Length: 221
Image 1: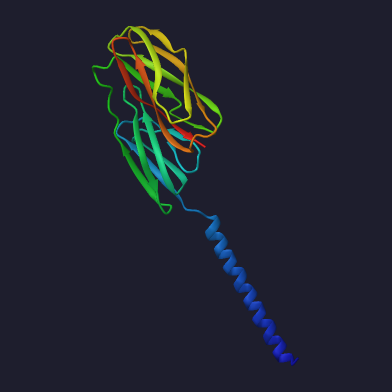
Image 2 (image 1 turned 45 degrees about the vertical axis):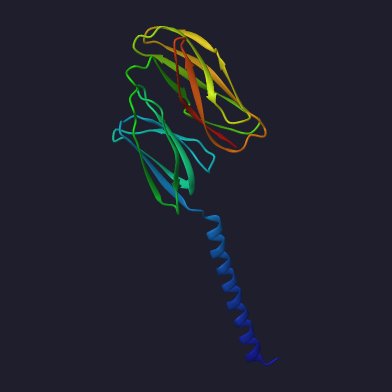
C-alpha cells in the first residue's frame, strides 16, 4: 500500500475513534447525571417541624429557622409530599408538590392554630416513616389535654392503606388537665402492599366525643 494512503487511513481512523469516545462520554454523562433541585419550604410561623418524602425514598426532616424557612437541596426530579407540625397548631399536609428539571420549588405552608373548642391535640414523633414491604416500625403518638380536659382517651387508626395494620400500646390512658399521654403505634406493612406514600389518620376517642385528624406520612418501599 502506498505510504501516503496508509498515513491518511491511520489519521481517519484516529479521528473516528476520538469522536466515538467523545460521543460516548457525552451520552454517559447525560445518563448518569440526573437533575438535582432544591425545595424551599416557607412556614408562616418559625420553628415548624417539617418532613418530606419523595422519589429518593429517603426521609428528610428539619425545622424552619427564625425566618420561617428551611431549604432541602440535591433532590431528584419528581413528586413529593410534605408534612409539618408545631405545638399548638394542627398538622399541615401538602399532598403533592414537585421538582422539575433540577429547578427550585418554593412551597409556602400555613399553620392553623388548634380550634379553641378542641379538648385534645394530637402529635406524632417522627412525622413520617419509611417501611419496607413485610416490615414494621413504631412511632410515638401523643395526646395533649386542652381546656383542662380530664378523662380516658383511646387511640386508633381510622384510615390505613390496604394491607397495613396498626396497633397502639397502650390503647387507652387517663389524661389529666393540661397534661399529656403517649402511646406507641406499631405499623406493620404486608408484603403485597403497593409501594407509595400514604396518609395515616389517627382517631382520639374521649368518651363524649372524638377527634380524628392527620397523624403521619407513611412511605412503603
